[in-house]
Amino acid sequence: NAGVMQNPRHLVRRRGQEARLRCSPMKGHSHVYWYRQLPEEGLKFMVYLQKENIIDESGMPKERFSAEFPKEGPSILRIQQVVRGDSAAYFCASSPPGTGGWDGYTFGSGTRLTVV
Amino acid sequence: GQNIDQPTEMTATEGAIVQINCTYQTSGFNGLFWYQQHAGEAPTFLSYNVLDGLEEKGRFSSFLSRSKGYSYLLLKELQMKDSASYLCAVRTYNTDKLIFGTGTRLQVFP
Image (cartoon, rainbow over all chains, first blue to last red; front, top):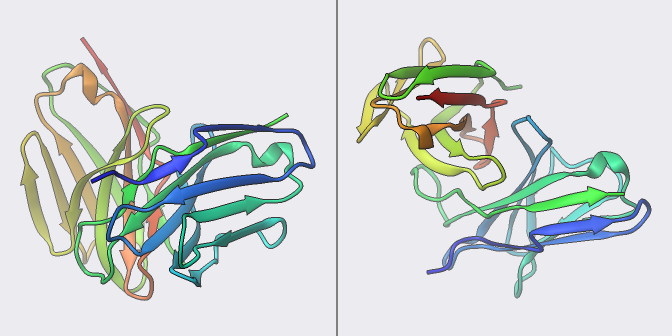
């Protein structure tokens, strides 16, 4: 049973380009969460999605950032017109349906975005 | 809103015991999680508390007091590989997401 898969592992983009980060949740998991981590800082919540639905996007910047989790395929975090301040590690986590328990919230290895 | 505080850095000696504290302020508390994160790697789950008291799992234990908004992670018989960041996170009833503190970077010395 593969874990949460994120790709690419490393991504370099020039200022103004688009970055697309992919996350495939664990098998049986239908909830996906995206987090951003700046160097030497904690994880900042960005967005929580279920299949074809954005449940909570309170942590998403108002412009240039979008996320989706289609019926088929991975969840995508898209950053348009990247700027140097977008350089960070972006982690995806997934959890199974239902709440209340501890199991779930398995993290992927992250995508390290560098904007040059 | 939610506020989670933990010390930024701690140091300890191999074989010793260390306690990492976490205080939080939140409404609708629905669980506190501890994760370990080595540099450049994904966070990995360590423990979960939703009721008051101590949860023990091998060398790691976690304690929760909901009335005080306080938790700690206790690491016993420290090993060099325990050098990592330890992240405290809170979940609330109105959402499934975890809100993380800034993490505590622990360095274990021989």
